[in-house]
Length: 577
Image (cartoon, rainbow, N blue to C red; front, side):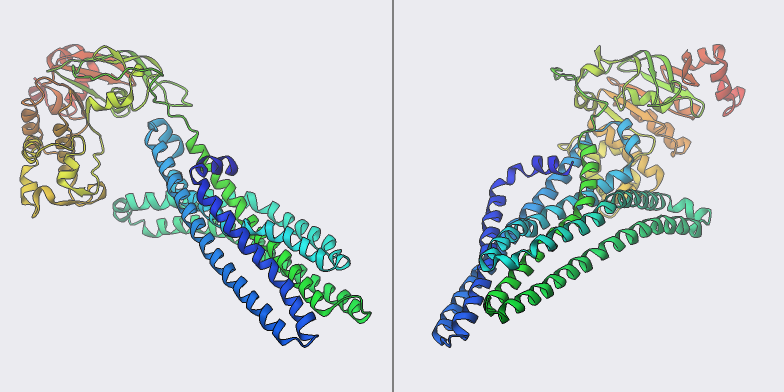
């Protein structure tokens, strides 16, 4: 998976890669040329006593060294820029793909592994590209060039290469073979660590409330220890690589010195030639060592590339069909006919043949016991996931025939767990309509019963909001989320138990104020509290994923036992009447 991924994402950077290759080739050829000059200094300058030749050749060597350094700096510069650009593009690609995922894909993959794949896995691929452009490109040039130059110096001594190089390749290959499965385990362990840490950060209040700090610390320690054990196993294998290479390198130099010294004593070889051959031998083995270092990184980068590719190749379950027209949904009419839904792999449907209508200027409420499928039903309207049977229509258009953006643009959703983004009160309120004026923001805050606490903030609309809205209370967070939906002014409002954190007086005032801005919009409310929905134009009662009653409050009190039980569990007979 690594090669296809790099082929795709490195295509825009052919020119800088070509520059890297040119400068790496130049510096490697310069490096290969130096031992030959050194041999000439020994054989012709020192042995012959020619001082002028030594100075001239030395100056040539100095100029070549300067050229080599310049070429290396330029090659590393372009290599670093290219690898960093690749990392940027990969992160953008993964992030952009995740943004298209529906609830089904998010549930299947999970947030921890998505975070790891966007950060750590991309970093591994980025690292392998950087090392390839700065080391691996030079390694084969130096290896083959070194063999050629060694043969030029002495063919008989070069026979050592037939023994040394295969021994080195086989030894390293046996170690590399065991590293790939360990790297796969390591990335999975990092996923686990991210998952545990994310859970503990989000649930810190619950952990402290139940005095579970020690237990959670132990749980994180176990996950960390599992990762450590795999990392140690990888470290043991990696620690064997360089000793093997150094052992073979030093043994080969000793053998070259032994056979070369014998041939020098017999007059068949010059001292400078032996010195040059030893330098070329070291260069060849150094190139193999550089390739070895790359091979150490390759298995982990290959695993990371597979994980990244898995994200990039995952097709979202919510897609627009080919040739779908772009439409503006302004009517606000919602129709569900025989809508059923089952989660992937579930044995039975969560929702069974639901019929529901919501009309502009009307409030449709959904109520039922815990686990009856209320939030799941509400999620079908903005197409957070698709029905497995039946149909969902807005303004007469089947949702699966529309672009998801057109559907989302017609809906103002206040989720069950309201989420605010880091920024200011104003930036959060303008999330759905960036061009909203301050006057419109204050109007939305007034309707959402949020004016009082926003005006008490020192900076008011410019007051900072932390990630998730953790610096405001649950009720304030809910009211800001409601105001955010109101600023958008969509034709359809969806409130998923969005009044649960409000007291009864605020709840009543907010619902009364909503009537002034939703006269032309369809409002769908999911609620547990009967007082929130008893005045709705239409109430849909769910029980175990089925509609067991539809009507107004008085009609359901008379005809629907499930609704009556819910009401009487919260109100007295007199209050219910």
